[in-house]
Amino acid sequence: MELFSLPVSTYSSKVRLLLELKGIDYTAAPPPGGYSTPEYMQLVPLGTIPAIRVEEEYLSESDVIMEYIEELHPEKPMLRGTALERAKHRFLARYHDLWLEPHLRRTFAHMDPATQDEAELNAHLDKFEERLQKLEELFEPQPFMIASEIGYADCAFPPTIALAEILFPVFGRELKLGPKTATWYKAVMTDETVNRVVTEGVQATLDWMNAGGG
Ligand SMILES: N[C@@H](CCC(=O)N[C@@H](CS)C(=O)NCC(=O)O)C(=O)O
Image (cartoon, rainbow, N blue to C red; front, side, top):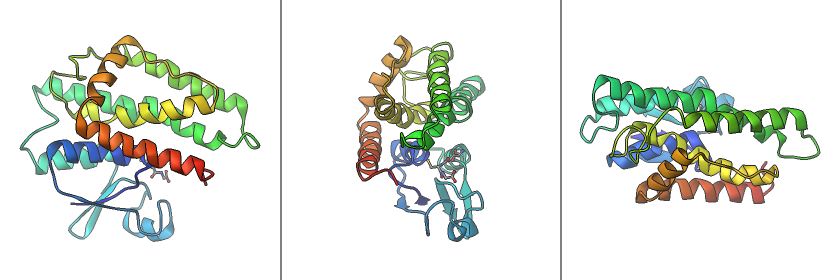
């Protein structure tokens, strides 16, 4: 499988986690021309990473890619359990993508103090904190999000929380996880594959920030 991705991309890490936890061979390459460029958008119309090549076609949107991989490789399923349990995996993955992560992403525009809009930055940081607290109401650590085995929902949050751990201090805040999220995060990060992929993303992000974040 051919995956367009970058180590700094949390959504790419999310898909890599699924691939690696399932033990699927893949090659990772940066998006040709860079993401959001006309060259890349000839292949992937939305211009985002991750994307995968399927024969002569391309698929983007991390959850769409992950469900496709699950259907293609039903061995070692990550979207597993009863229909209700599978729906719970999807619900948490959607909560991550639509409700939580976008507020962290929007803080990137305010990294440079010279051009920072403090009110907008704080609104996004507040909302991210609020949504992280809301997560406490959405699952019970078992220790993984839906079951005692690592699964689909567990792939979405680790790269984002690790990124927030880097970004919050940059903005003078301390990232506080609720007790359930902290228990789950500790468990998920003890998985060797999760730890390796997330640590790679953290290092790439720190390198990018130290190089000026441009
Ligand atoms: N909803 C998309 C989000 C992907 C996304 O935002 N990726 C970032 C990198 S982590 C990106 O490609 N940004 C470029 C852009 O938004 O134009 C998904 O789940 O794949």
